[in-house]
Length: 297
Image (cartoon, rainbow, N blue to C red; front, side, top):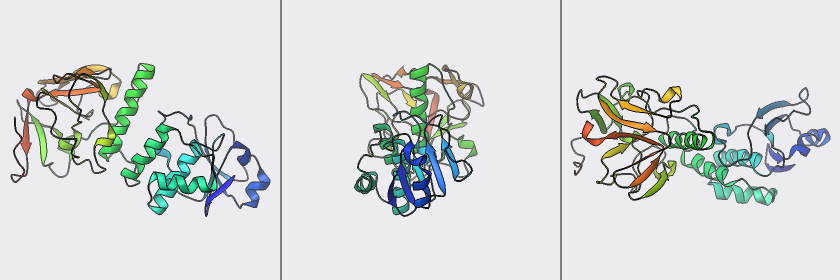
């Protein structure tokens, strides 16, 4: 067991089972970050257990903590270190690498796996607010669902983009059904991809935390005849576990495109996974701010 900062200790399963050491350091709360782990002293310490494997594709960011606790996993190197790093980053408002360097000075053996390191970077980009209302986090969840599909052949819970009709303020840029003019998606729902052959997964790290454009995000390649978007609340079949289905307007039922968790090829040659696409010739782009430049076709 190593003291990282005041009120925060990181250790292994051995540390959690050493009652004398726990009492010596004044530990009152224990966070277990491991699967199928039974607390050693449930009547003497306040426990919280997070069942998670030390695997790159695990979604650990949703568990990042607040409080004064011992955080432990089995070896005290990856899972517990990741959760403790998140606490330090938020408390001191420092980046991932700076927090890791400080932790290694106290506990040299810590070594979060690459997937957890990526999530710590995302946590910093999110400014420590892990909520589906943040486009960056929604993109991460899309990737997480796609990884689950590739691994197990099924789709788990999908976080859906909010219906533009439910938004309190109109977006500066949105796409509407050409037939009935019903708003479908906004600029925050559009996912970019690089043109060309091959396969690419949507990436959460191409946008900033507010979901606004980065230099790589817009425009999509002009050879692209479709817009690739995140799964939306109005799409039929997405929330029921369908792997593929048509995408139709929720108002007039006009066919707009299709979705497929296994992916689809864009007209520019890029294979995009997962694929939620609407055809550009089925929608109209609308800009709410007349001072914004017109999109070139």
